[in-house]
Length: 350
Image 1: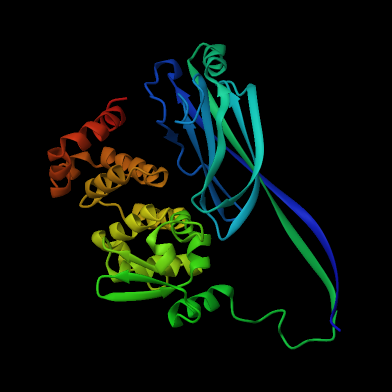
Image 2 (image 1 turned 30 degrees about the vertical axis):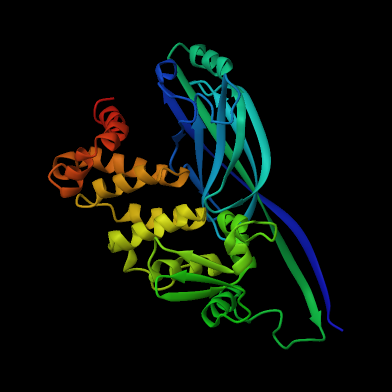
């Protein structure tokens, strides 16, 4: 029989980042509006950001500030110990709150009642400069296994095999043992309920045994607002957490927009973050206004990150962006311009 002798030790890594407000008392944020820090730091290949709701989230009791830690990029799941601290501009701590959570890419976790707004208001007065600093501290534990020796089976079953993603890709490609069909216009994509439900909350609700939805009874999901390439890429990410040979997508606004729409519709936050990361790296004067329109209309937590990146880019290249067709479309949409206009003006004229 195979015998394994090993020693296991746990190593911890900690990093922190800060998000500062100047003019805290003058903030004009309604309940449910949040500020996103952008990437604060990267720890062991995982990128982290912070969401702060100065007037609380929609679920917050009145008079509370809501804070959430956001995992922007990681492979699989990562257990993290996270802690928020409220500091004044001199770095003096006034409050803290911590917890642990099993994060997946694109997911956030925190409190709707993190800190009393009145207490944070007092912090802003502490040094007389109306400033408040929120700090996010993340600690990741990694298990290190030191194998002493293996006896018996040395056939390679413990190493050197195909990665899980390759087997999952094959399962999707062949459709073996499939029990659900995604109908896309004139095409069908065979898939597996358990995989879709595990990776998408929307599919989980739709295909649950106790669901009264027609899709749960028939095993057929008709998707009328997407084309076949988009649905196949969505499934590829659901099965493998990657997109192979996708470089051409990021230069095609329509294709990448459709994929971002799919991620938002089916609540696949990891895919949304992946698309946004790629798109943000390719922002230019020709597409920045168009992507601002897309991000504003989708209005998800993830697209708020893209919206902030678009606003930053437009601020730096306003003269050129104003000459594009995308800018003209933005200005013609009065409701949309009313939404993003004040943010853009604040950035240009703080």
